Structure formats: C-alpha cells, structure tokens
Length: 340
Image (cartoon, rainbow, N blue to C red; front, side, top):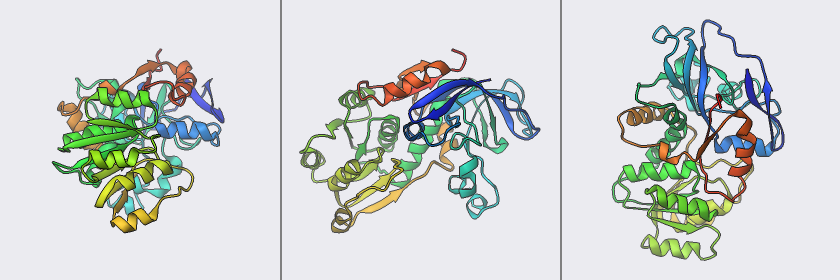
C-alpha cells in the first residue's frame, strides 16, 4: 500500500510499504479520511522518528472485523488511536489516555506503530466505533480533536456566564472555543500571532474577539475586554509567551488549562500563579469524551466540517505541512483522502 513516511527533519515521502495483515484480532480499516494534526507537525519539525507513519484522526471502512463480532466488512467506522495494555492501574480504571506502556505502541507516535497516513490501518478492536449512516468520513476525521478539546473544557469546568480566553487559532483553539460557547461562556476571546488565523476564528462564529498575540499591549487590552480578568484560560499553543500572556490575563483565583504541547521545557512565570492563586491543570487526550463527542456529532449538537480548510491526497501531504507552518495562510485543518 501507499503511505506517507517521515524521512527526516521536515521531509515526508510517499512510499510503498507492506499492507497491514488481518490477524484475527485487530480490525483492518481502509482509510477514507485522515486529519493532519498539530502533534504530527511537531514530529515533522523534529524529524527524529525516521520511518514513522503518522496519522491518528480518521474515518474508514472495515475490511476485516477481526475479533469484533458486531462489525462486518463495509461498516463505516472510526477509532480511538490508542493501544492500551489493559493491565496497568490506569487501564483498570478505564483511563486509557494515561496508559504509559501504550505510548510506544499507539498509532502514529513511533515507527513500530504505523498511523493512518496510509491506505489501510490496523486498530485495537476495543477502540473501534461504528458511525451512523449520516455521519460523514469528514466528521469522523474531526472527532479526535473534538474529543481532545471537549475534555479540556470539561476539566476546566466552563460554566454559563464564564469569560474564557483561548490561546491559538489552530483547530484545537477553535474547537475549544466552540465547546466553551456550547457550555454557556458569556464572552470568548482568542489570541493568535497569525492575523489570517485570527480573522478566520472570528468568521467561525464562536469567538467574540481576536487579539494579536504579538501586540506588546495585549495583556492590558485583554484585562480591559474581560472587565478585570478572565475566569478561564485554555492554552492551545504550547509556547512560553502564550502561557504567560494567559496567566497575566486571568483574574485572581482563575483557572488555567494547558492543552498545548511542548517538547522542550518552558519558562513559565510562577510568580503570576502564586500572586493570583491560580489553578493550573493539564489534559492529555480524552477518556469518555471520545464517545460523548461522537454522540453529540451524531445528534447534530456540534458542526465540525466548517473547520475544514481543504483536502489533499497522500502526494500532497508534504506541501500541506509547509503551508500549515508558513504563517501565510489561515488554514487550520487539512484532511487527507488516500484515494485522491
């Protein structure tokens, strides 16, 4: 089969690789759509996992149901991109996202566990979820980031009337704003360094105001806009200036949720945390939020396809990574269609 393989720093190549083989247990899926994720871009930027096939946001059709007796060939499905051990304390509590033994065997993270930037994919049988007939493959590919952000908004406990600051106009920031609005936030502001993405966030309709993250006066402007400080801050960028801006813009006793990922230590202003007695939390992935988000999508409670910027085949993935990191475009979510 054809797949997109990480060859080095900022270098992706489409290659012929062995097609995953049905083993009587795992579910073999033909990939119809796969999303390009910010964490994929981190791996591409670092280039230190040569041979990696990325991709963990997808929808497809069942080719072999493996051990899942409730599935049949041709069923439309998605899956949690996890491979939990089932034995550790986290798994015993149903917290698959905290299964440390699974990290090196979860799809799209290490070369030994191929992801869905490919024509076919093997999934842990317990992770596969059937799609209702009216749920599109586009929506299925958007489900994973929707679950990530739903967990973030739930953990930070956005309540009706809260003022919420979101850092980052990428797909995680946009979805965080969408869930915060659904939770009843009265005012949602977003900081973003790319003005095209900032303007795009306003067009999506969930954000009340966009502030240029590069503006030296951004903190006093945020404080004024929020009436003295935000109740909640959801950080979706993972860089120190973004985190510190948000901490400074929170009111005393405010809540900060770290959803952005950094692979290097960050210089965070702990004095802001102590002086304001801020509550700092962080989230990794999701637990029951994946199924909850799927239910809400199925019931039409949230519309995800509006965030999709475009589609490419496997041969267009390298150019898409270049585009998404150039700062010259407002694109936030590009989907891969392996059939193109």
